Amino acid sequence: MIFDVETCPVAGLDCPAEVLVTGASSGIGYALLQQLLENRHVGRVFAVSRSATTKVALGELQRDHGERLQRIDADITNEDDLARLAHATQGVDALHLVINAAGILHGDALAPEKSIEQASRSTFERVFAINAFAPLLLAKVLLPQLCRGQPAVFASLSARVGSIGDNRAGGWYAYRASKAAQNQLMKTFAIEWKRRNPLGTCLLLHPGTVNTPLSAPFQSKVPAERLFDPQRAATQLLKIIAGSTAKDSGRFIGWDGNEIPW
Ligand SMILES: NC(=O)c1ccc[n+]([C@@H]2O[C@H](COP(=O)([O-])OP(=O)(O)OC[C@H]3O[C@@H](n4cnc5c(N)ncnc54)[C@H](OP(=O)(O)O)[C@@H]3O)[C@@H](O)[C@H]2O)c1
Image (tube, rainbow, N blue to C red):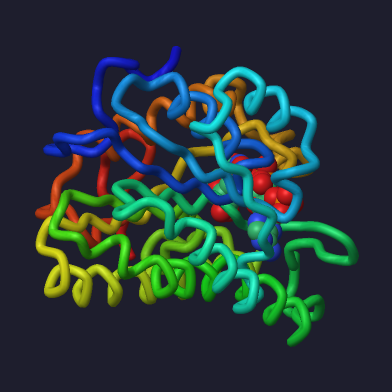
C-alpha cells in the first residue's frame, strides 16, 4: 500500500511540491521519503538527519532519483545546523511540504521512565531538545520559504501518549511531556502562521504504533493488527496531509483521521 502517485500531497497546489522531510534516515521518515519520491506531483525532496549522507539506503534512493533527492546532514537540536539547513534549501523559492519525523524515545543511556525515581533533568533536556524544541526551531528557520502566498503544509509527528486528556497509564514522563510541549508550541505556531500565510496548514500527527527502531523495545503487548509497518503508516499520514487544508491548521490528528484530545 503506497500513497497514490497521482494525488498531490499538498491540496490546492498548482506547481511541483518542494518537500523537506526530517528523520529521513529511519522508520516512518524513510518510508515517507520513499513514497514522496514516487509521487508525480513532487519536485525536489530534502532528506534530513544526522546521517543522511552516510546511510546506505538513502544512497540507493539517490541513485534512483538523482538530483530530486538532496541529502542534508543536520542535528536539528543544534541551531548552527538549523541555520546551515535553511541555507541549503535556499535554492527553492518556496517549500510546500515539511514533515518533521525526527524524534527519540530511547537511546544511549536513555530509557523511558517507569517511575518518578527514574526522572532526571538531563533526560528531560535531551528528550525535549529533539521532540519539543526542534520542530518549532525548524519552522522558524524555514519560515521565509513557508510564507510565499502558496499552499504549504508543516506536519510534525507527535504521539497519542503526549495527550494529557488521554493519559491513563502514566510513566514515560519525558517522552509524554515533550510531545505535549511540542503540541502547544506548534499550535501556537499555527496561529501565527495563519496571519503570515493564510494558505499554511500546520498539523500534529499521531502515526499509530509503527514497527521502527523507536518502538522496537516496546512492542510485546501491541496486537499484530495494531502494529503498522512503516510504509502503511506513511501512506496513512500522507492521506491525512493531502486531505487537509488551512481550515485544519492547528489540529492534533491520529492515523485514522480522528481528532486526539490535547
Ligand atoms: N514508531 C512509533 O510507534 C511511533 C509512535 C508515535 C509517534 N512516533 C513518532 O514518530 C517520529 C518518527 O519515529 P520513528 O518510529 O520513525 O523513529 P526512528 O525510526 O527511530 O527514526 C527517528 C529519526 O529521527 C532522526 N533523529 C533523531 N535525533 C535527531 C537529531 N537530533 N537531529 C536530526 N535527526 C534526528 C533519526 O536520524 P539520525 O539518527 O540519522 O539523526 C531518525 O531518522 C518520532 O517523532 C516519534 O516520536 C513514532
